[in-house]
Image (cartoon, rainbow over all chains, first blue to last red):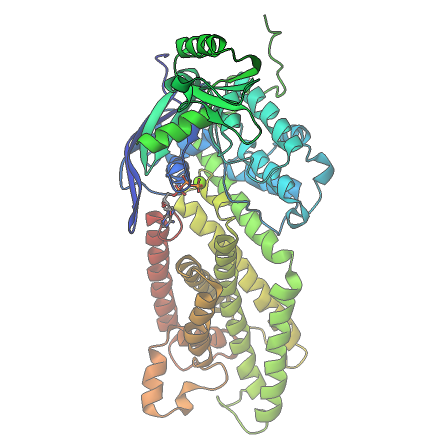
Length: 302
Length: 279
Ligand SMILES: Nc1ncnc2c1ncn2[C@@H]1O[C@H](COP(=O)(O)OP(=O)(O)OP(=O)(O)O)[C@@H](O)[C@H]1O
Ligand SMILES: [Mg+2]
């Protein structure tokens, strides 16, 4: 990794809410330009971590910095460097879309920001709704407005807390194109999501949280190799399989057979045994492990 | 190889789109003024509810009380009851509306969750305080002007003492704007705010000599009234209009000023600590 100041640096972060230890010593470094995924089950502490970065929550101990600026000591610079799309679908019903974005710009000290506001609205398909009151926007539109609000000050670091929850396929796709574009331009992205295929496709590196601790943190590629559970699905011309395989081959409801294996050599043996027993393979499908398998595995183990 | 990546957002890059603000001072003023502007817009967009309604309420008080009491009560020699009542009503309206502006804005933002929009930007707690306070003061003053304006139809015009009038009006609105901030920060639900309003603000304003002079009260209640900080605001403000009061207007100014400083200090401590705003 580069020597540059990390876009996000979190160290020994702890936070307790009355009886819940939401964060229990979290350390993370995210480099500039990364597309980083933060995964974990409900209540793992993802939003708490993001809230601390954003200054919405104060940590009990530990440090957090955005682009090298401590989020408490240098909160002005830290917040200028950070754009946050909150998990909750919030809006101010007193204003329309354009007013909302102008006001948000003003909070960051940007008075004449209309050019940029028009551009964000265009990219997020908000232009036709510019004069609509935020209350009358659909859920997906409100979500887009939240994304737009997070971008008014062109933050180098963008944090998205489950931006696609309850969002239709079209918006999800256009949102990801947009965010990937920002990432290619050099913006650092921190994403939390419960859609693991999204994280797998987008994130270069992923950390998994559980019970307020980081239980895994690696490149997506390395994480995918963590589990060597492959699965083969076979259609055979016989109802009985060789005795040696009777425990391992599972007969599915649709008549096919399923086998889990960790080494391709096992698959070779199986095929040889089947041939030896005179059983013909009519069809075979291999399933590669995906992030969901890895995630489930890690959550079970830890 | 892949084609070079598209660049959907020219200027979005942190490297190319860099927009630095020169002096930190300019930045402070701008973030603060935007929040102030937003708070003004918030009450101005519902002006019927935030300004017209309180003016009508004050007018009703005036009609009822002055009709019933005008002929029977002369609080100060040579001052008609209506002339006595008007400054009290103007002040009461200012107090209630300055309080209401900051407290209801905060509680609404908290309940709706959009408070994050002002917590995420680099606004200092001082800017936060000044913006909410400024808007609350403007709302209080606008309502006060409105009430005074309509009462001119019923009471004879008297040139008030502008110095006392301004000093008391500004101090009263500032103080109640700050009290509203404390209430808005503290309350987590609308009914908690309502309790604050019904059990603290309302009794204090009604029992402060808006409708009567505390000299007409038994000694015990007179002493109690002197412990009510709102009493000094009403009394001193009335002095600006009728030139007579129950206590020295300088003393009132001192009490009101001390209250304002104390409540502002409390508000700033709460904001700085993030109490109930930044968990
Ligand atoms: N303000 C709060 N008061 C009390 N407990 C809280 C508060 N915020 C979070 N918690 C608790 O802290 C833990 C972590 O919550 P957090 O919201 O960070 O989880 P998450 O990983 O974002 O979950 P999700 O996937 O559901 O969004 C949970 O047990 C939650 O109940
Ligand atoms: Mg969350």
